[in-house]
Image (tube, rainbow over the protein chains, first blue to last red):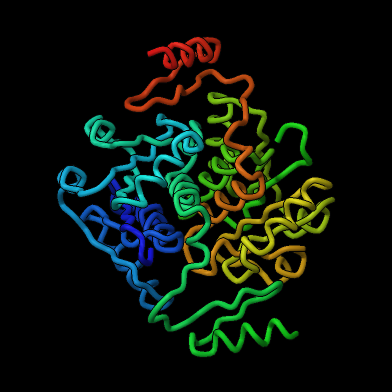
Amino acid sequence: MDAEPEVAVLRYGHRPGRDDRMTTHVGLTARALGADRVVFPDNAGQSKETVEDITGRFGGPFGVETTDALNGFIRSWEGVVVHLTMYGERVQDVQEEVRAVHREEPVLVVVGGEKVPFEVYEAAEFNVGVTNQPHSEVAGLAVFLDRLFDGRELDREWSDADQTVIPMETGKRVVDPSEAESAADADGDS
Amino acid sequence: MDAEPEVAVLRYGHRPGRDDRMTTHVGLTARALGADRVVFPDNAGQSKETVEDITGRFGGPFGVETTDALNGFIRSWEGVVVHLTMYGERVQDVQEEVRAVHREEPVLVVVGGEKVPFEVYEAAEFNVGVTNQPHSEVAGLAVFLDRLFDGRELDREWSDADQTVIPMETGKRVVDPSEAESAADADGDS
């Protein structure tokens, strides 16, 4: 995000059909909550298309890539690797340390699908649990990113968008980005 | 959660088959991140079973219900209604106000499926956007709950669990809850 060291999200594992929506949501959540890019397994081409489409319409920069070598991608990462897992250390216990590392070097966040081999647990500098309860890899990623960036990601600005949503109390308002600033001003006056 | 006014999550809309996993993840996220119960549309029986199964194994209390009257459920809610939507006010702008209301009365968090009618926007005291970007209802719910509870939900304790995960740096450790405390102590010594 902006001038900080990069944060990339790696979706580890994908079953075409069954996982399409979850993988897409991992990618969209990575984009919306401050990561710089997402990396999907190369059989997740449909999710890649969807995330690229959203980035084209709502802005970037945000990268979407695929890899045919998940373990190789992790091994060759030049920075710190964080693996999100319900078996890991409590996020509230390690978040300060992870934030400190992120001030110095890029962070790769690995988000599991169904089966993550022990190799990934060993390769990760941090195995982190957003609770030690079973819930959702999308929920875990969202809370982790919000805490990693300490909320800064919510103020991120987007470039090259075709459309921008103007936050409002009731209803929906979507405008051309060139109108967004004046629309927001008008809301403030109303 | 514990002695606080209730927080319930209502999943608004469900398409059997296509939405099963997303609806299940909404329920599991609600449970893991501090809500007291989830309410599903009555065609989401499979998701209800899964969330009840997880609650039986990993503990509660957590309620799972269904309703055949989503709008009626919202109308008759005795407390404040928060609708999560990418068109809403920014969560960082309204979270303090929502926290203050929650100190006094129960909160119903409405999480949309594909189509949420305008009636819901009008019925909600707060329409809240966790970013004004398209991403994932599961991610939005997760960040919203983490901010509503200000992280307290991560320290929640569970009753009547059959199994408990012991957080650890590398690997997986699942024990009987009666062993959890001594297991944690042993880890601390190692």
